[in-house]
Structures are given as structure tokens and as C-alpha cells.
Amino acid sequence: MATMADVARSAGVSVATVSHVLNGTRPVLPHTRQAVLDAVEELGYTPNTLARSLVTARTRSIGLAVSAISNPYFTEILQGVEASAVDHGYSLLIADPHDDPEHERTVVQLLHERRVDGMIVAPSADPRGTLAYLERHNVPAVFLDRLVEPEKTDGGGCFDQVCADNAEPTSRLVTHLAGLGHRRIGLVAGRPGLSTTSERITGYRTGLACAGLPYDERLLVHGDSESAGAEQATGALLSLAVPPTALVTGNNAMTIGALRALRAHGLSVPRDIALCCFDDFAWADLFSPRLTAIAQPSKNIGAQAVRVLLERLAEPDRPARTVRLPCAFVHRTSCGCPDPSEEGTLS
Image (cartoon, rainbow, N blue to C red):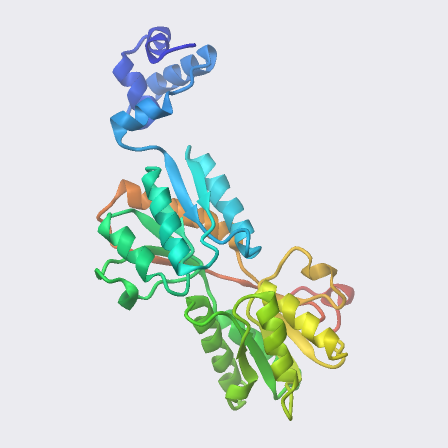
């Protein structure tokens, strides 16, 4: 097995220069760097990651704590994180907090004990224990998808955050439905305490106001970000003396639950009730009718979180920042509109 000394001899440089090229610890002239890389390729040299981590105090690994198993939306985010991490020469350690605050705190500690260089976390509705741990141990971390409010950080610390825009896209769904003549528009919102839930509720109320419609608290229910919860919440909406004529669902799992409830009540979309959803997903285009949705840039959110974390590792003292990425309105037919693809129009 080739050693670093073998690479140095082949490239005609010192072992220290080989180390600087492979670890990026000091600028090296382009032709020298290329000679080292050519020698690495020719000799089939594989760096000793453990030994390198002992010297640099870096493991070139990132911890990722997201509920990827219990929430399909995070699966695409995970793909974006993994691809970007590999592109930058980092490995990924993944843990599923199951959206449980206590378990989240546990898995974050376990990832930290594996000496990851930094973490990417999709925080639960009550992340105070996790935040306290990260602050106490000065762990470089980026929160993604869900924002953490400053008042939840016991030590007053700030973290980088990456998420999609939530309020304006939700408002657009509401105004779109209002423009189709709907006056009673219900919202199946997510789990209380999550920033995505509160921001989408804000967007819902903004959309109503823009359309000149009153806010009726009976038309806002919480599906707890899950299919079963949304099915029950939608059933409650449909049991109102004057039920809504249109629904907005707060995520892809709740869309499935809402559709189950509508079917159980014998209602057809969009003939009996219009439906728009936050979160586009792979099979949304296969439903009949096809689902009008807000598409989040999930893979890009994951990739951006990696880039922001690496910038944090390179500049530990720079100010924290929040990056918001735009969403796309995907116009299909569940809202009651004619099929845009059949009309030859783009939205």
C-alpha cells in the first residue's frame, strides 16, 4: 500500500507539501499541486483518515439529524446534503430524531461524540435541549427547514439557518382559490411550535386579507404534520355546519390524510371541494385530479445547508445568517382549474 512518503518521492516534493495539498492546510503552486495529485492517482494512494484527523483535529464528517424515515420530504433534503457533502470531500453520519425533542437531544450528542466537524439539524417543535447542548459545546451547526427563534436559545447564541420561503407561497395558494370564487377556505396546518407551521398560518391569514375574506378560526385546524392527524382534522372541518369549499394542506403527509378524509365523506376533488397543498412530491402529478402545489427546493436546501456549514467551519467568528430559498407554484387541476398542460400554457 502506497504511503505519503511514496507520493512525495514520485512527485518530487516534501511529505509536508503532500500533506498541504491533501488537507488544504496551505496554498500550493498549481503545478506542484497537480504533480501531487497525479502521483496520488498513479500510486493509488488512500489517505489515512484517522491519522489525518488526529493531526488536523478534523474528521471531514458532517452529522445530519433529520426525520428522514418518518417524513418523506426530508428524504430529498438528505439527498441534497449527501451529494454536496461528497462533492466537498466529507462523509455523512445520519440520525433520525423522530421529531421528538428528547430523542433529538440524544442523537445530537451521539453525533457529537463521533467527532463530526459540524452538524445540520432539522429542529423539533421544542429544540431547547438540543440548542443548549450545541451552545455549551460550541458545536458548529446549521438548522434547516425549520427556523429557531432567538428566545429559544438559552445562552443567546445564534446559528446559521437555511429554509424555504413559507408565508408568501401559502398566501398565493389562498388568493388563487379566492380568485376561483371560494369564500370559505380551510387550512390544515402542521404541528404547533414549528416555524414552518406558524409561517404558513401567517401566509394563510395574509392571503385571506388580500382577498378581502374574513379570518374564521374554525377553518384553521392542526394536522400535526402527519397523515393520521390531518385525516382527523379534515374530518372536523367537513363536520362544520358550513364546511369549507376549498382546502389548503400544510405538507405532503397531511395532503394524503386530507384526501382520505374527503374520500370517507364521499367528496370528489375538485368537483365538491378544491384542494391545494404545500409540498409538491413525486406522485402529485399522478393523482386524479393532479395536485396543485407549492414545490420546495428540497435538494437545494440540503446542498445550501452544507455550503453554509463549510463556510462556518472556515470562518467560525462570522455573523450568523439565515438563507431563504424561493418556492415554485405548480399549477395543476385539484384547485378546479382546467389542465394547464392541455391548454398549452405554462405557470
